[in-house]
Amino acid sequence: MMFTRVEHQRNGLDLIKIDNDEAKIVFTNYGARIVSWKYEDNNIVLGNVVEADEFYQENPFYFGASVGRYGGRIADGKFELDNQTYQLEQNDPPSHLHGGSNGIDRHLFDYEIKDENGGYIQIIFTTTIKEADDHYPGDIKLKIIHTYDIDNRWSIEYYAESDQTTLFNPTNHVYFNLNRDNKEVDNHYFTSDKLNIHLLNDQNLPEAAATLDLVNLFNKNKIRLTEMFESENARLNEQMETYKGLDHPFSIGDELIVENSQFLLKMKTDMPNVVVFTFNDTSSWKSDMNIYKAHSGFTLETQNLPNDINLFGKDAPSILQKDQAYYSRTTYQIIEKLM
Ligand code: GAL
Image 1: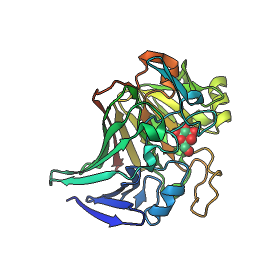
Image 2: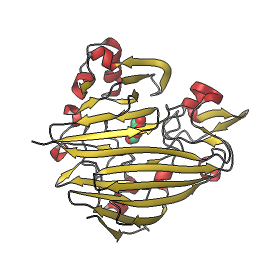
Image 3: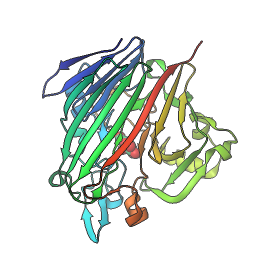
């Protein structure tokens, strides 16, 4: 059995709550974001249901948000497209990050709930991204569908179309933590046939060719986060020292599995990269609502390589042609291990 309920909070923020037999998942129209995902009494994502209307406006860490129109950093907030140079807001100086301060994480989306007793429930979120708000070329009609099913699979689908050729590289900024009591995530294992980490320069930007093959380096495809953090490999060590954890794009195999002793989280995506951020510094948010310590979550932000437009020019995968239909899909499934 699955069912939904809607709770209205202040400022037009709604919570859409979906339950099945084992799990409860909550989304909001504010940023088409995930607010909570509980498997029995285990919270597996970071968020705040009770004070959602206040918490998400202030939270600077993009908890659970849909992010865009461009998920990753863009160097100096600048790019060229069809012989025109565009200057975006440098909201993470000197870079542009997460689509700027008028990104889709701040949109109040329209939504519709679809429940046809078919073993899944969908929330269809829609909005328009306007050139006048974020200074990229073109207005984009965007639809984000969150689906939850009886097998505890959450899927995110993005449909978009732009009236000008533009950049489009959305993601979701959910923070997972499979541990009880949000104990730090360093004990989680990452498994995939391929785990290539893209090394970052001192501006937090990947260089196209600089990757380290972790499956080769560790000689196995299941690697504990602590092994990455404490590696003696000089290049990896330097990155972990600089960033105090991961804030890195990975190229992965068909599927990525993250696990602790109790749960498996399986992720599949049609995007070439996933940015894993281990919430390395939580101190910048001065608020009573900031109860988070470093490493109390990790993101799996599926996307094209950050700054791809400046790395690959006209061949950048994030270029969306005028009137061309965009589609992408990422799924996360939570599975309790048999004890
Ligand atoms: C990540 C980004 C981090 C940090 C975070 C938001 O995607 O790479 O550096 O800005 O978002 O707090």
